[in-house]
Image (cartoon, one colour):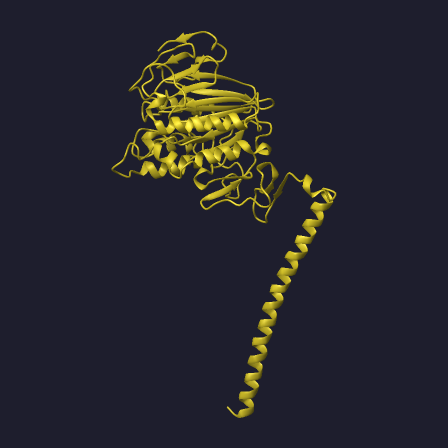
Length: 402
């Protein structure tokens, strides 16, 4: 190639390089210009909406492109200046920083994409057309085979929400519980079923081995979750009360509870708070597992009660519901319940006193029926055939058929 040819090639190459740089810089400037214009438009719109009174803003939610759920970026009720920043291994839920493991799966009937998969209220079994309330069923200590009749009775009702209160099959896998409740099949409940972790689902029962149930339990139940149901009238807080979960990371579930309870915007309209644990915060006389049996759980329950006392408005009903003991029992004031009648018949024991007026060793489960308008409710313990054993309509009568 002659000199003139090489020179022309160099000039053309230089022009291409310069043109590319100019193009890239132009794109960058254009993007910055679009962002700056959007920022000005958004600021102007907010300023106009509050008529220049920026201090009157209590909370700001934004919706991002291709994201179904709005994100709370400013919430003065939490004492936050500017955007809420969560720590590592936390995520922002309804303006509250909670541990990643606490994020619940899809909550049926709330019209939100809880699991952020782009779908809303998916895998939620169709409810009876005549239902005008929210049905919540709770049962723990669900033993494989002997608990099949309990599972069938629960699934036949098709509750809006079913929560397994730990010890979910007494096996080395969670396959039976998943097949019986959480699978999206004609016989299951899909996302209408969730759970909390029991000691038979965790390392506490398997200290020297690592069976599949340990990983399955975290995946299926999560750790330290919450949900609002019944048209926002009822808040459910579910906790993992296994000792390791309460210690590592230290205080994360208490932190989650405190953040949720202190968010007055989120808790507005809540009439009832259900506290769900496997190991009990309260239990009936003669129970095989006493509250003092687990110092970690006892301490956790005390800290939780302090949070509730400090943050919950007067008039809100607080109910404690646990498993671990293999009976069904309720207190006279109807604020404490044991629903561990899911098929495990070992280590049973019943007793009543001035506080606990009902206890039975029959297999059964607990159902709440919550009015979607005002949050009022009634409840029953039901047997394997769905027949009432004991309930709010007769709870004023001392009853112990154990």
